[in-house]
Length: 334
Ligand code: F6P
Image 1 (tube, rainbow, N blue to C red):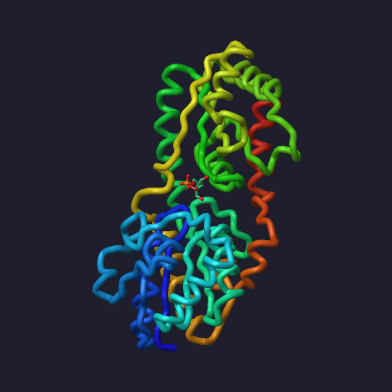
Image 2: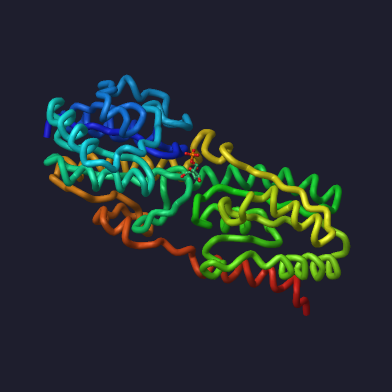
């Protein structure tokens, strides 16, 4: 193996830079050259790239975002795009492509592999943690901490005014950030996609009942509801509006949004990214193809890439259960 390429694709995640760094340093140790494609798959199509040497990755481990830039590339589903990418990779004598990204980026990698003879190795990089086969994804741990820091601040003002807040977190269609933000902040309620039966709407009267009994038990107090984005038409603002008008309570919406994608990665993300980045290069060197490199019980694992598409990752049922028990203890105090 002489030359590999790396790209970051889809939503950027804190720790992507740490991962690029580990890839470059491990490749250098193995006398393998590294090319970085810029702007995700777009760089592969437009031959927008830069060589990456150890000197290029000094002091990036602590930086959020990605030095290679990221982008979505909707056209990368077509046969023509994959053929063009394969043509460019062959022209540049790339032996293996390493893709750091989420589900959409992994589908792009699988698609490319149908038209290209080189090796494809992927690494899970997304704040959403919605990738099966790995306990955590690069960026997820930082996103939880960022959300918690913000929610703690909202709690201060919520307490001062004894107000109800509806706080929307990211996650696309998965409740991993929402569940952990709810647990870590001691939220009174959480609304997550996994907890709603298919097609069922959020039960507003149940929320109201819970607010009422909480206040009966504790007296007038703050009340925080964590909601995952894309769960209610119009998002947290529309739902807060509805609660305020229809249920006659004063409910304030807070949308945490893109702050969850930025910032210096926490230690868990730096270490995960470093471990997976180094391992991915070794796996490529050893001829591995169409795999995702992930982590289970603190050990690096290789997962068939296809599995990340066909399997849905569940929330930890124990975490869900204890958090729901805590909500119920407010309802049924003994
Ligand atoms: O996948 C990461 C993520 O931040 C999701 O949580 C969110 O739904 C999505 O990306 C937003 O994507 P974009 O930045 O393309 O609007």
